[in-house]
Length: 36
Image 1 (cartoon, rainbow, N blue to C red):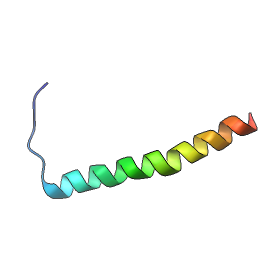
Image 2: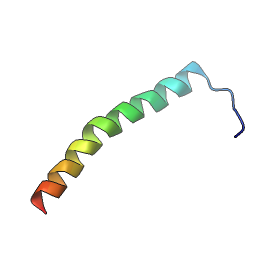
Image 3: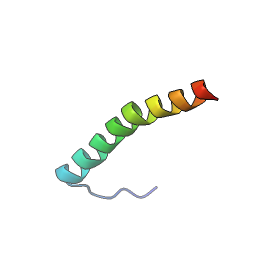
Image 4: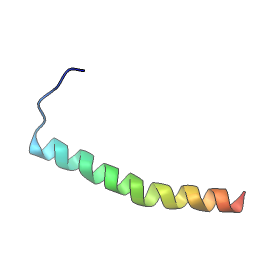
């Protein structure tokens, strides 16, 4: 796997998106499963 340089801004954006997906994404999936 090739490594690519990443700016601090790019890293921060990816990190924020990951936190958002882990938080909001999981809760919506849990609700959907509970309703099924």
